[in-house]
Image (cartoon, rainbow over all chains, first blue to last red; front, top):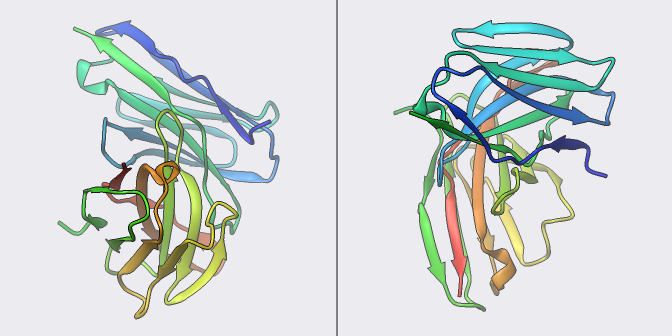
Length: 111
Length: 116
């Protein structure tokens, strides 16, 4: 079993929809939770960064962490065609150096 | 542009050849990481440096792979006797680490390797 599980999709939604992406994990020592966006043939770009449990909002993006359920989510409001990309969840221990990534969910937002 | 840069962006080589990739991290970052990403998967950790010291290597990093960061600035990743299974995107990332606080990692654009 992988430490981080993420549904690879693809997920296809109409423009303006609310998108929900999520990951589950097994290592209770993870404290840092990230979401990266990766366009085709490009490096990952950091979107959201959360420490421990709770919610964090940045513009159209909201990240949620539920450590009791070992479940993290990313919500995208008013989705745009430019949001079409692969979204990678990632996590790390406190003081850790190695980031563990999910496989990524491919998102398509149709105009 | 003060982000992480990688060179070359694409490399096509024949099986058995050696290849070397370069990464230039964000200038004030003392930690540098190498990851490998295959199609449909997330990045997998290969190795990391704090300044010039290589502090951790993944089991994924076979004896054919070697990484250096000689002056604590740029890093090189060399693959000897390449195999078709080495075809992947090789990603470099950097951050700073001080005390108990570790910043998140910022990634470069990657080097895409194709082994024929």
